Image (cartoon, rainbow, N blue to C red; front, side, top):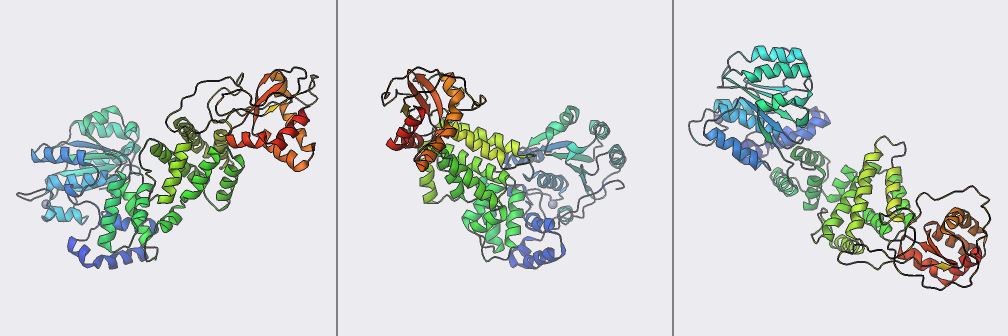
Amino acid sequence: MRGFTPRAHASRPSRSQRRCGHLAQISQQCYTTRGRENVAQALYRKWRSQTFDEVVGQEHVVRTLTSALAQGRIAHAYLFAGPRGTGKTTMARLLAKAVNCLAEDGPKPCNRCAVCQALNEGRLIDLIEIDGASNRGIDEVRTLREQVNFSPNVARYKVYIIDEVHMLTPEAFNALLKTLEEPPAHVIFILATTEVHKLPPTIISRCQRFDFRRIPLDLITQRLRLIADTEGIHAEQAALELIARSATGSMRDAISLLDQLSAYGSDSITRELVQAMLGAVSVEPLADLVDAVIHGDLKAALGTVGQLVDQGLDPRQLTAELLDYTRDLLQVKAGNPPALTAASAQTESRMRAQAEALRVDDLLRLSRLLTQASLEIKGNILPQLPLELALTEAILKPEARPAQAPQAAPTSTTRPAAPREAPKPQPVVAPQVKREPPAAPQVKREEPAVVEAAAGAPATPPATSVGVVDLDTVHRRWDEFVENLRNCNPRTQALSAQALLRSGAPMSVDGDVIVIGFPSEFHRKKISEDAPKALVEKALA
Ligand SMILES: [Zn+2]
């Protein structure tokens, strides 16, 4: 065994122990004597599948393996590929047990014979588990090649499980390949990896390959319920669903989290407790953020983000959860119930209203912006900035269109079921912009807001006809104009008009009418009210 770091085998209490509660004592010992990482593994080890029937979520692998075993077809090299926590090592041990089980008849593994029991208790010396990450060099594989030639000690087959096999060096792979090409009859290799694409094709082609899938949410939840009930852990269904959801298909992560939560000292595992543990965001602020996007309310959007981050929330997590929420909205839009864990009736009706107000295009775009933001967060010196920019872009440019639309001419837009009221580019002002070159540097908005749906003509006819300017000039002078608005009277109205105009942008000039586009109906209505309109017209005059 020189040169290897075999993994510790987990001893697993018998079923009778499970039932009569000796386990509680064992767990307690674990909590006091082991590190936190191991503590969280206690339940997982205990609930590791001991028969093929107990395996959750990998039926396709179980079916193929068991029928091959029943026919006595045993390969010398298997490759188990798939995400972490989906049961690759567990399946490898089951296979090792099944090929060596001494039972005369009945299903294998029997878990009763000497070999099964030795393996379950972690003392079967013919099962060699190797961690590829810490035994990745040529020397280790050479040692392995020498060892495989010795016959098994007690079992029929010597089984080598190499976990994280993609970590091996190219030289080590070459050495391993030679063994895989001419394996001794008494040896079985089971290679497990989360990153099968890093394996040389020559290795893959030597193995019988099985791809493990992420375990579906409902299966993880069911399993957690079974564990909680059997272990006497009180847990809300909503809490278990949230745990399952956070595990993203990894049974191991889900059970480990349940384990940590049960050690928390609380009477019952509630949804709030899970949220606190995960640092999860409650649904309301997420819904608030989407509302801000719908209403084009940049102030509310950035304010909410700032507030949540100030409360200590990780911007990365916030972005991920908002993305998840958006994904759920897409489900609702498509007519499915929200997948959001334990969405209350209140949340659900709010989501329905939001799905109604948003078009599929909007949701797609928001999803893309948030996905992009989540990629940019890593390594950003201002971790919340990508999220803020994504929301700003979603609000200021509700439609993916050229930044500067030539004019606010009607264009056809796809409108799926339940369209919301189309805001129109409205406020009409009579410009009298002087046609001299601007005094200020030609500051130009990089991304002028584009009106949500370009449709309709100016509602109000121009007041007085005075001179003609072109759109370029208006664009050039726009920032300056908006900036100077603050000097108008009455001041409070001037400031609010200024804030409104900042979210808008000139769309077109038709004679002496400037059409300004706004991201939302709200802005348009506000600026079209008599007072601000008069003020802007006066300022332009
Ligand atoms: Zn057996």
